[in-house]
Length: 227
Image (tube, rainbow, N blue to C red; front, side):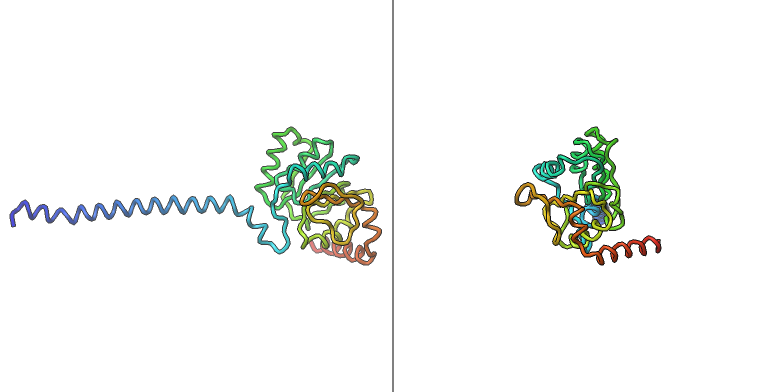
């Protein structure tokens, strides 16, 4: 074998090694990009998905334009403070503020709360709105005269007890999508998924068994004493 052939033979493995190293680097880069994208996607999606993993949750399903209109129609003769329990992207709170309410929203998802604050600023009602990152079961709604709730059936009975024990007798409660299981609505608006049920606090507080109210009140007293 000639010297030239020996040099060619000896150089071939080096070229193969360089090719393999090059492909390895490309593979690492691709893996890093894909992995980084998945992490970023999880960081964005996790706050939206996590509430659905709770035993009793308020999944984020945006209110339709008709639902917002029905809520405002149900409260057209009302004023004062309003709270949206599970406020999502803030559209009920913002619409209520535009109609003169001092409106607040409570939402467990921080991404939606920050987005709601941005929307309120953009719509020019940030001074008459507030949004809070909080679990609804850890908040007292005693200061509100108007309550809006987009609930799920699993939570409505328990929420009846909470609201009946906390709200003033002058309050109105508007339930969207699902009615309360034992309360008798004084009126309804809309139809199908856009239906809203309106409840008068004076009525549901008087019809709820007294022992349940006392039990709920005692439970909350114990809760605050333990904190």
